[in-house]
Structure formats: structure tokens, C-alpha cells
Image 1: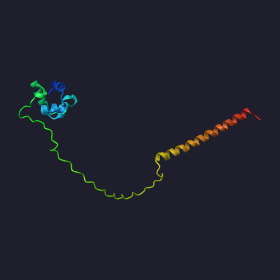
Image 2: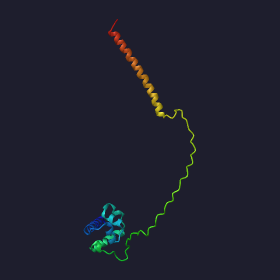
Image 3: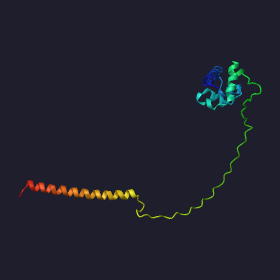
Image 4: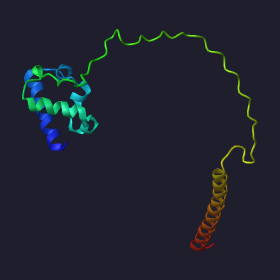
Length: 157
């Protein structure tokens, strides 16, 4: 079925539902379709999910040019019937039992590393920091000696 045809069917369905002031469930009952298909027919994004039979049913209704409430599905066509609540299998009551206490897991052996649990990256950073401290101390000593020389040069005795 072409998208243009689907669009025409969808618009006709929406107009009919609005004119007759029907719910999707009521419209589905008149068409003999699952309410999900009627809902899907209204939304272009979900058209791919609809069955061919649902589109054919909508086409037959569209071509009949009658109201939704007056439409009768063709003879021999499968008509959707919702399951009645009595037909549904009642849920079995769940028996609650106490949980068994969990067995304790065997303890994993503790592995001691040379870095005492610290990452290698941290150890490298400590070494880099120590080197930077030495460089800073050397710079400070140089600057102090330069200041001492300048003060001696400016203030001769």
C-alpha cells in the first residue's frame, strides 16, 4: 500500500472518530480490529507496524462510505474480541519463604605490593616533585648569592 493511500485512510479514520465522538476502543469494536491498530493508523510513524489485514479492513470501511457505527466487517473476516476477565488465568499467589543465610565466601589472599597499594603514577610523580624541589633550592641559592654580590657591590666597605 502506498503512503498516500495510508494517509487518506488515516485522515478519514480520524475525521470519522471525531465526528461520531468515539473513543479508539469503540472505533476498533465497530471495525472489528484490535484497538492498537486503530491507534497506529492515526499516527504515521507507526504505520509500518500495522498488519496488511488491518489496512485492508480500513480500506473496506473507507470504500463503504458509511459511518463507523454503521460499518459491518465483511463475512468470514476475523473479528477482534478482547479477552474477558473470566477467561484470564488468575495469578497464583506467591508463597513467601525466608531466605537461607548466604554462605560466607572464602577470603581472597591479600597480595602486598612494593608500592604499598599506591599506583605507579603516584610514585613517579613523587620522584618528579623531589627533583623539582632540588631545582628550586638551587635557584634560590643562586639568587641569594646574586643579591649578596649586588649588595656588596653597591655598599663597599
